[in-house]
Image (cartoon, rainbow, N blue to C red; front, side, top):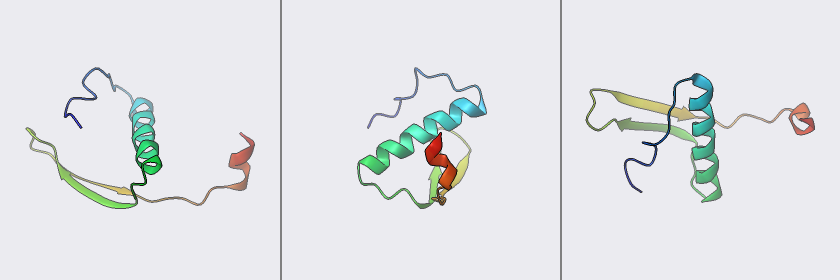
Length: 66
C-alpha cells in the first residue's frame, strides 16, 4: 500500500470523511480483516497520535427496508 493513496481526494466535511471511512472498512471486511477493536497509530510527519475504535452495531430491523 502506498502512503499517498488519498492524496487526490478532498475531505472537507464530516460526511465526506464518513463516506471514505465506510469504504475503507467495507474493503477490509471483504478482505477478511477483523476491523473490530481499538487501533492506535501515529500520523507520520505530524505531532498527532490517534486511537480509533471500531464497534460493530446490531442492525435494526428497519435498516433492511431502505
